[in-house]
Length: 198
Image (cartoon, rainbow, N blue to C red):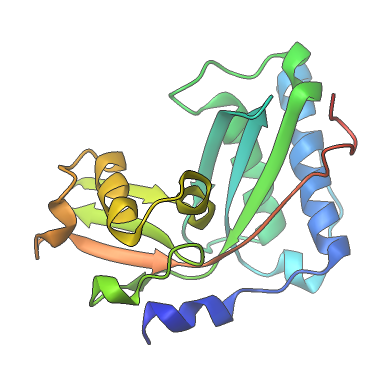
């Protein structure tokens, strides 16, 4: 299966499921920052109790404030989101941990991922639909589908920046020793005027 068909595999979440995941992420961050405890959740939706991979992205006033995810669907989607929300707020090495005063200023975005597919040709990659992961030896780096769109990158620029994210040279994607993987994602976030926005 080529990556151009992966986009069709995205798990379609209901509006209620998306709202639940966003609430889980926000309540988890608030609880972790205030008491260092993860809140309990009673989740029954089959779409959320099924195993799933996801990234949680935090923005503050339009600027990235944290982004961490899990690429393997090894646990229920809702708990993956809870854990990644915790990690994005407290463990992203690019930022200091989120403070109590910042929680209300955060905008939360969730990317629910499809399984990774190895790319046999860069032409399979569709900018705006696919995210990328580069792997070579002990180095790896990943960029979500929306990143290329936000920056207006071409396919080649997307490949180059994913290599840089992995700590490789920008042209490392041309080396046969570099493995390229792609995936799609269902991306959704809080409304700008929704709870927790200021």
